[in-house]
Length: 342
Image: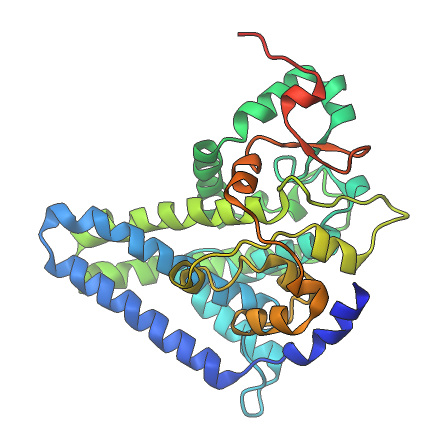
């Protein structure tokens, strides 16, 4: 598996021409949909929230790649890191998710994914073990009832789109965060900068497309994007045959390939989601930009042999929510031995 990490390095180079093409075509599509919404009868305006929301997911993937310094290469005399950071800040004004704050939290996620002994910060996304469930029966029942598609959709929207406008919503500012928060000041400034830029962006949309379109199409699109994006994030690591390792066993290559899912989508949804369904490839090397993930997957045998999730696998992502260390897989509440009272 470690060969995949080494072999992925040639794909971890941003191509500015491809990145520019993605930006132009995506924002052009976004503008066309917005234009159609402004010209259509008012009763149709809410229906445009869905394509706009899907487009916001794609735009957020660009921001996500910028956070890994993978979307762009050096631009003239501007370094790779700085060019990605500048673009990421601009994109965050559209998505409304603070660039530096989210990048800092997300990079922490990459460094600690699959560390079963290092849980506790993100209590929802961190799996509850069978042993913990048996000790906390009420907590286990609550978890099983909370992890349902619609509830995860709504809770994800609230967490990602609403709460993460402010610093206190990020892991680094929570009391149970185990590490020193050395990035607190820049994360606070990031929230302020994005907040101002996002308000300006929404005001511009309202001025150009009309305030009714802003209220009926644009704002609901963030609900669509936040909910669907959270589904994607949930499925990426909370699937039945995922991998959690202890302090002695933990290995980056293994946890990336076995602990991250491969969600094979059709070409349309793959375009909207920026290939993020190839999550095992992304975790193997986060420096691979979205437009080279499929290329890397096909070229590297350890990545190519990973089976995509089936429809049944997707359903079990929301029912098998307890980690069984003995069986090395996620199991449902019934297999834990807890039967909730009616």
